Length: 92
Image (cartoon, rainbow, N blue to C red):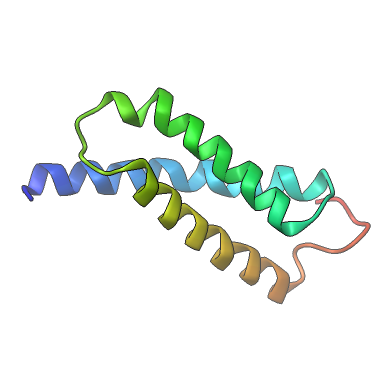
């Protein structure tokens, strides 16, 4: 894999991280269960991939992007829960 391709993948993930963080926060205030909220965020990332990333030649599959995004969601939500960022009954 070339340096340019690796930089493209890094740029992709750096652009997706703020989107994931925003979606996590937005879906948290909407209520519901964790699994359903995670699926909603992953669906939004999938749409982003289809519309934006899928049209480029970065060379990373949608499944790989969703897998990494899912792991990142688990880490962020776990961290937010540990520090008390998400409180039941209290919107962010």
